[in-house]
Image (cartoon, rainbow, N blue to C red; front, top):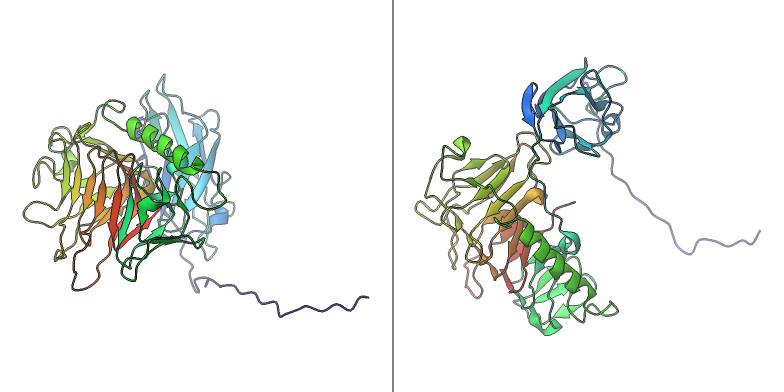
Length: 410
C-alpha cells in the first residue's frame, strides 16, 4: 500500500424533502386540456392534465399517461411533469390525424400501477379524456435558435446599464465592438465600463464581435442576430396571419372588449392565441386609470402560446409609466393555470418602453430600441423593473435601469 492520504477533508451536502405525514388522500385530476368531449382539436395538440396536488414525478410516465386513437392504435409521445403547476403533459412525437377528424382517448392510470402523490397514495381509478381532432394547427412557438440563451441583445448598436441592481440571468451581447457595452460585468470576470453607480451583473457571458477573450470572434453574436431576425419575421402579421382583434368582443368574447382603449391590454384576461392590435400599438397601464394587469390564462395547457403583433414597421409596446416616480400599483403581466413565459412573444418593430417597477413576461422582438425604466432618474429608492423573458433589439440598442431579466427555462 502506498499510504497516500487525502490532502484535505472532502465535504458534501444535500437537502431533504419532507414526505407528507399522515396523508392518506388519493390525488385526483382537476381538469384537462383539451376538455373531455372537446371537438375541433388541432393536430399538433399536446394533451395536459392538472392534478389536485404534487405528484411523485417518477410515477408520471408513458406507462401511466397515454394517448390512443379511440379503440385503435397508441400514439407515440413523451410525458413530462411540472412540479410547480402539477400539470402532466403528453407531447406526441408527430401530428395527430386531422383528416379525417379522428377520436382520441387519453388515459391517466390509477391504482397500484398508476400515478401517485408524494405520500405514495395512488389515484383511485383510471381517468379518461376523449377528444376529436380536425385539420387545424395550434399556434407554435417560433424557433429562437442561437438567440435563445440571450436575456438582452443590442443588435448592431449598444447595450447600456444604469444602476447597481441590474441582474441578467442568461447571456447578453451586441453584434458590435466591446466598447458599445456599458455598465456590465459577467460571470467570467469580463468588465465593461462599470462605475460605482452603474454596475450590473450578467450571470452568463457577455458576447461582442471580439469577446469574450478566447472565443471565436463574432461567431456567437452573428448567429444570434441572424436567428433573432428569422424569429422576428416568423411572428409578423405577414407570416402569421389571422390575429385576433382584442378590441372586438365578436372576435374574442373573453377578451373584455375595448377596456381602456382598442390597443390597451390592461384589465384583460386572454386565452392562448395570436393577437393583432387594430391601432398598430399596444399599451398596458398607460391610459387613465394607469392601473390594471394583463393576465394570460393557459387553462391547464402547459404548451399554450401567445403572440402579440403590432403594426409592421411602426408598432410599439408601452408598459406602465416611465420617469423617476414609481406608479402606486406597478403594472404586471401575470401567468395563470400553467402559462409559461417561454411561450409568450411580442412583435414590436418600432421598439418597447417598459415603465419603472413593471413586470413583463415573454420575448420582446424589436427592430428598434428597447428601454427599461428611466436612465439617470434620481429615484428616492431603488425600484427594479423585471422581464421574465428576453429583450431582443435586432439592429438597435437596449437600455436597462435597475432591471432584472431572467431567461425562461427551455
